[in-house]
Length: 341
Image 1 (cartoon, rainbow, N blue to C red):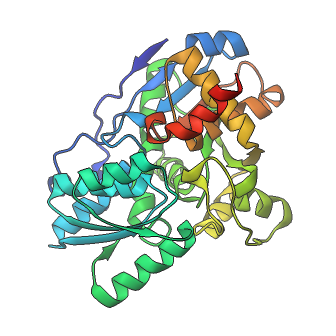
Image 2 (cartoon, rainbow, N blue to C red):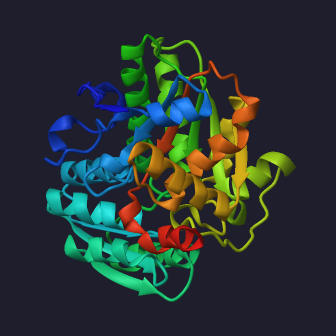
């Protein structure tokens, strides 16, 4: 297996903030892995892993925080507020530190300890919420309304989608080295629906510019216990349901970007796959032991989703698994599977 970094391409014309405002922290240009052991075991010669655990704070969320920080610097904003299950919090705290911003965070008390420690280390002000992410989300909006601060919330601030689309732009750029621009399938871990919306935005922008001629099939990989978007794709409507999954980063009662994600999936023949917590932990262990890449449960959901539907796919197809967070962010969940061995 070899990890192949992206060449630092310029996406300036596709972003709403000029490059000079971005803080000097190396976000993006993450590796596209060629997992030879996993390819051989599964029989998919053109399987790739887009490794966004390689971002500075260990998750894809840095892409959104990077753009939010640049916007804040351009407009003289000093305070940023957000709610998070953990990764967006530590991301905004870290990128905010590099940008010289004050960051206020609302996070469920049950969030993994490592993510809380990250945020505190970066100097953010952290409020633990005795409740769910959805409650933390509402508290952060209330804080912004009453005390000010630029709210970064996923599915509230449109800059988060624009920032996250850069992962899709990089996939196209990196695949060109292999004689291909657009994969057949991309598997994306989905909670609120913002990352998948960003991936769609990347391909739709490139298609509108004439740089690609089609949109790949994008799969929303969701935990069974937090599968609002997958259920809505089946039934046509959203039915709020309490979330329960080991994959905290994609655990939401109500997908805040659900309607946009659903619209994009329907218009572009998107697919959804639901996977159990046990399948997520199995996929996490499988990925680690065959590639050397340790990801958190939410990221492993993309791998589990691919494993769930691989028998429906052509073995010659080109597939990209988007992994979004480092496994060291939540070692307690990983330990559960090891204890079963």
